[in-house]
Length: 276
Length: 178
Image (cartoon, rainbow over all chains, first blue to last red):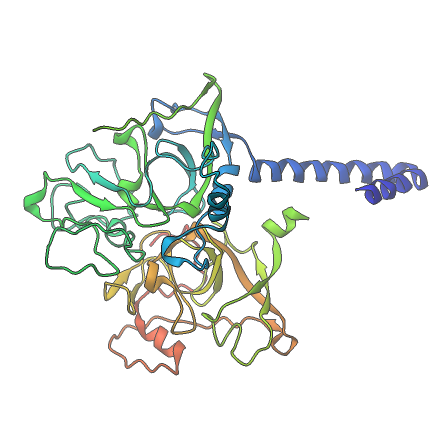
């Protein structure tokens, strides 16, 4: 930094006219880069729009504050696959902190929680960025209600089911993404599938309840694999979310929406409550 | 500086044996230094079958994985164990990646990955100097017939044999209609 300033000073004194332009251009470029990096790595304002998050986020353009530091911290402190105690999935930092005895003392604010509004890169279109709420974390079981109003699907992107006339996602093979995208990893969670004869194989089939025409009114349960989250829009009848494309990898999360700047400034609180 | 490395090009070290013999062959004393090209990815980049890409692992937020794209969206590929289904139609916005080595952890373990996870394309090997040069893009073309015998020594023919049905467009972009 010092040498850069000295260099710019010599530029300014040696050639008065052209160096000023160069100086300003360099400073402008540096400022742009710094601002861009700050927005990328720490967080900043973002514009969101669309009807899928009503009534939380309105259909028109809204300015929110996006926090991109939390997902990066989560990546840093995530359980490493190369740690010696592989089965327990202990991260290096986590075991260090547990050793010190500061196990989760108020440092959990940056972790992804159920109920966070996240900005995610779309798994079906790499150019699109979507904004939804986290409903389930890895290991959770999500129940899909087949009688809930379904979102109209985009034209021509996912083939319609030839067999069932009712367009309900879990009980028909209409959504090829939902069928096999969840089959991603060894199922290390001990959840017994519906058929008692199947062994606890490393790749337990999902969804757990096999869809059939007679079970159209039964909810389908989906186990979220490790490293994935379930997204849902607040406005479920107009939201294309995980009901369409299945659990989304946590690596796709870009940031967490913490507050809204305009039109109604507010901080987004956690709306989730436990039901017993 | 950081912006350049993040968004344009960066040189990184590749470790692991899942891409042998293309990267890190057994007889090499060093790990490969490769140029990662981030300009060619994103929604406006061109993805081809046979490109080596680096992507974030879908299962755990750990290091980047380096594998080769074998099938694009809409293709039907015959999978290898431990994948539970025999054939998979790649959904919209996803690709099937496999390592060159038969022991690699790739899409046969975690299924097709979304394109948004892809971080960079590997374009040039920079070290060791004996293998300096662009990474050859192996042309994986789909075969209409299934049931070709798979010989472990010939990985490219075997990969083409398992790519059962695919569209033959070579310069494919993510926003192309089916």
